[in-house]
Length: 631
Image (tube, rainbow, N blue to C red):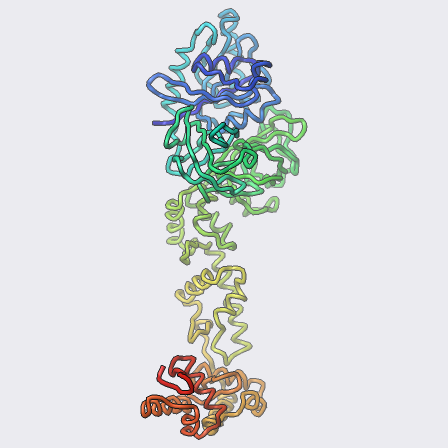
């Protein structure tokens, strides 16, 4: 069953609250000031039973110009709009402004109600209907049902309920599979219960006991209890008016406009990319860099408008992509609607749809930014996910975050990402990371350039260690993520890894005739020195060759020499003989001492210690007291 929200709109004192009371029996004027002044200041709510057993929530919003902010707070989540016009006054300024706001918020359908029909002649009612029909031309209410009623005599009320029931049957159901989201349009304290928030559950299902994160503050709480139309329930569904008793939250800790949502399901931002429309009848332009009041959900935030296509202003009736740079944090989703009002004088001038709730700061007239906004606004889902991955690849953003930015489930986002990977447009490297193919190519180009330069300067080195390559290429990225990308490059054959050193796949160490002679000479010297090799610095100095150190590194990488410590290298044949000797001594006596090992090799204590410690570190031997045993 669909859960439907009906919202009222219209000029002050045109009978909205009286109509709701006549339909539901509920007086939605709660405040003493409202009853005294006869106008609605705060939002009011009631439950309306429609023919066919449909239960609808009805929101009574303020009509007075000063209270448009509250009207905007109540309009979010509305499925059916009732534009109310009094027969004795007809279309008035706030009628037009409310109609414009409802259009900007993309209310899908509505009905026009002519109230106070008992106060005028029937011919006058027909004339008012004709004026209303002209006023709604070109809006979502053009051709909408129209019903004349009297809240005092009851005339037309049953017919109105029947028409509302028809519209309710046609209303599109909310997505209950998404994480729940409830913008708080009222916050109050209830004796014996604590802090309560109310709002329209825009999507998802909220259960009693569910953990809740309040955005943008990040405060964690729980749904202690839930009510729908004053009835306690165990769960509430998208499309219902809901009151939630929050656990462990003080009233002063939360304000209207915060969003109660599933933990980590939303994203805070100081900017939003939007498709912005300027009302054709507003009589004003929206200039680039102008300050406006930005209304989203129940939030009102001052913002600067940056028109992205380079124009100086957006004239009435025009639309374009823009970036709104906010003075406070907002929590939104792609596809949400918003309204903007002038900073001064305070009047509605436009609004539109959020195409990216977490964008980067764009340069004006940037071709890629504009293309991206259009894709996120109008493109197929797969292209939207691809563009979001492209935007956030340099941050190595997880697919979970990409799904949140695009308002997708993780399952759907992965389906689209995998399709893009099969097409070669993105690269999956594991760890929930998909990277744009162009970004991966850019990293590969930088890596190959670095390695080629390294090989040119160090022709005798087998390559660089992973640690150095990570630091050079992507120092800010997590080690595991960079390793996953390096493994991808190795798998694709761009690079190779041999003995812990990474090089270009085609690279091969070639000493050349001159350096080969130096290598042969050094190898002969180490063989001759056997178990008493010279210090490394002495060997390099004696060689009198700038590349002697590189030649020795090459000999290490090829296993000709073994490095016991920075100043003691030993020939591999001598090393193997030393290991064979220590094992013979241990096998003969069950253990051996440093002195026995030293004497068996015919060397000094210095070299015997270096060899035994090397064996111990590699668990070839084990020190027990003053002796060694097999490791």
